[in-house]
Image 1: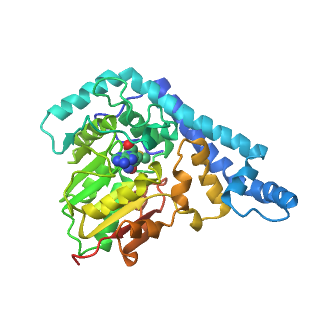
Image 2: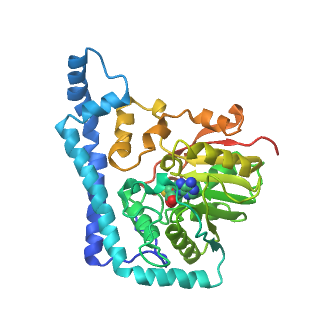
Image 3: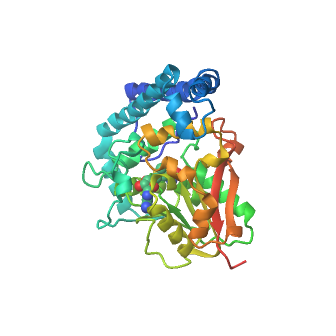
Length: 381
Ligand SMILES: C[S@@+](CC[C@H](N)C(=O)[O-])C[C@H]1O[C@@H](n2cnc3c(N)ncnc32)[C@H](O)[C@@H]1O
């Protein structure tokens, strides 16, 4: 695994912490690559024939496939390991951050007080939506918004390090690859679009916001999140890397930015963590915030209609076992219709592969491309 690039906010691991963290990474590889490879065989040789024998037909939905898979000891074993992996990942990172949290908090405060390239605007009156704090999403203790201490940055630190380990470094050394890749896509595909202001919704610890700032060096880059500990960390992190990003605490369902303020709006792994009520509001807000001719693109896993029932059932594991309650519902949705409902023209809806910059630069872990879906606003062309 390519080492995570150092920056002022990255928690430092001692020997034992590093050993535990590397173990979790190796375990993830074993479970999600090696053991997962057996799922298809188990399904085709045991699970589907047993289903057919009992029902007189093949399974018709991913729910039938999932329920049938759950009866098989191989799947039970790999699922239990997957769950265990997820728990020890956060444990291994959280323990390390606990040890140095006071120093990280002070460092973030010091950076925020210094002459910065970007900015940090917090809103203590914000209400955290229920879909974000009813469960600890993907089992991350305290979720995105929990404040364990004053001026906390714990959530940002655990997310930054934990996601790097979980993705086995496939999002770039600064976790920037979604940002750099989607920026490159927009620059290449829309040469007519003058990108003056960019917004990332749901920026978390700021990895992809750094990538957007690198990918649009002349634009003003803004990044919002509802969670203060994420934003404090993200801001100090971006400053220490040396890229200007304006971070603000805001709910993507309704922000205070003026109409038509942004030429490009992005969300990476944001939408699947919202809800059936919030999602249409967020997309309407995207439509309001885009300038004429502006482009919005979101990164999520492929819709279930695009993959086999087995793949859909495997992806749906997160809905049922990884505290991602909205996962399955988002992937069931008609991705064109949700943008049409938000005010975009059907002809302007986008569903495109976005090539990974990290992959092109030779990161062996990075996928070749990401699924991007979104829409371009009418006018200005
Ligand atoms: C999976 S993380 C996003 C990761 C990040 N985009 C990246 O690429 O590293 C989802 C983030 O979206 C934020 N979020 C979810 N719903 C939101 C909303 N309605 N408004 C603002 N932020 C939201 C969460 O607080 C969380 O930090």
